Image (cartoon, rainbow, N blue to C red; front, side):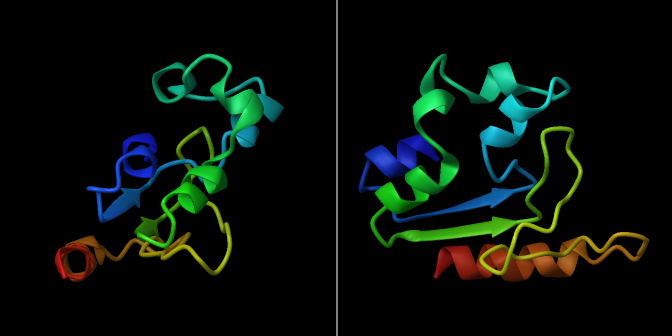
Length: 105
């Protein structure tokens, strides 16, 4: 996402099953892979929504946002969901093809 925000040659991105904000990791002592995702000090000043805004209208498809423990969370209407808590039906293949088609337009 940082590369897409910095380089206008990246026209659109698809984020899947990724945390929807840095603050969630900083507010809790338990998280996974924070050190892989954050440049030291970056999350103290910037949030993921800032990176989306820096993309200046280029497309961001964000599916199944998670918390920092990898659980899908209800993060609002701008996100798209294929995971439904308690539903064991595998919908991901058909939905992934549709999302990939949308990304390739």
